[in-house]
Image (cartoon, rainbow, N blue to C red; front, top):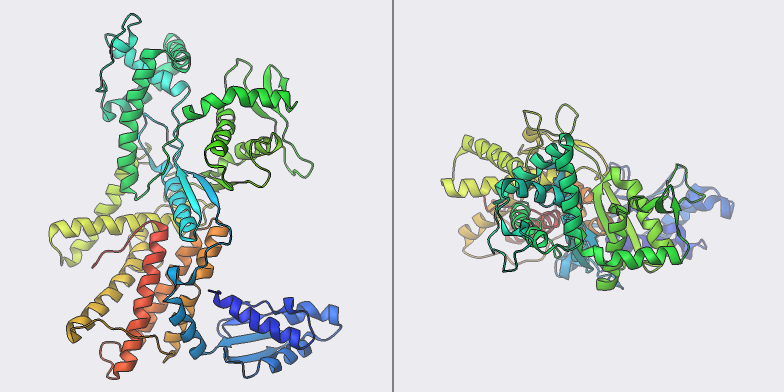
Length: 588
């Protein structure tokens, strides 16, 4: 199904061609002066030079050709050469009636669906999720959902940090605390215990303790380094202990991500890429891309078009150790082997932009991916407190994500207490649902690359550009429909009618832009565009509600048309917020 902007552009382009001008000048756009018209075309001004004719005269000719076109209610030429377009109510109504019968409301499937690996999440094992993990999780989850809605195969990979010194630190600390464990007995040949020797709470205390100790205790730092080497060389006992660390951590991570309504298809780890590293390094050498510099193995990635310094990408350090860049390149090799993706998209802190620039360039130069494979990086900004600094707890520590979710849920619960109309269990459940919407919408409504201020009071407000306001709009529609069904003992089944008033038409116009919004949000990796859309649509619905008698309308045909309109609005809003990763309760 064509987008409405495409239908408008086709008609205007045809009019340009009929007047003897290039049809490409007929591209229409949403009006930047909604007080004057709904859509506009500036092609007459673009074509004036080519045809040596005043743009206003070109515009007038096109307008005359469009006169009487059933798609438009009004078309006018405005100096110096704008073409103002207002869609007819009947054409808009016909478009929406077709849209509501279409799968995915007219969002077209791509001609060539892509396989996309989406790398988001990126937590380290043995550590709790904290607020620094929030943005990657919810931005990535939304992009995954949008891509799938459009018909692509999107594979979400959490890509766990499970390798390197952090594992050696944990193992060394466990050894100091529990030296009697069989994992440290080199003569032990039996089966290791199936139960982990620590809980997630103990594990999360062990790592920061070990990390701090290594900074002041040189002997312990050496032990941690040795433990890392033994683990990476396949020590049987250390591998068994590492498996316990992984199992305990992943179980807790899955529980916490589930609280965010975030899921992953793959729980791949840095360690999974290790087997691919030797051959990859040899290839870089054999292709004369990698060379020694101050003892390290590096690849030049600078390009003539660079406006800032792009250092060589270090593949192997002078002491023989590998880096994140090595692991990320090996992971690309693994992903090509497993999925042969058309795209690999990384969602991570924007401060990692240079790292990914280097990795992507090495991957392309070395042929680690097909030439046609897109490697994309979406860098996000920082979530800050009201003081403008990275968000912290009151005592200055890093807040656990679990606590952040609980705090915002409790804040919503307290707000709901002011007008208590539910039993305790339902109120708690509803508060959690609203809290998640407040948290996700508060983040996603900002352009990903921008820093933003985390303000609980603003996020949980039931008015303004917030998640709870969007949910309240959906619940309002549910309430209207429920009251109608109680009054009439039946569900309404009707087509939409042409708009009966200005607010009705504004609502219909907003609904008609659903497909282009979703497609644009995907193309630009921009969930905030869907947030802007649902806010606009919610405002349009609420204005229509306040200006239109729906339940008290005596004309049954009109009433049925109104109900069909708000029914479509509910479905579009619910679909949109599902793409953002949250849902609406039955009542609030």
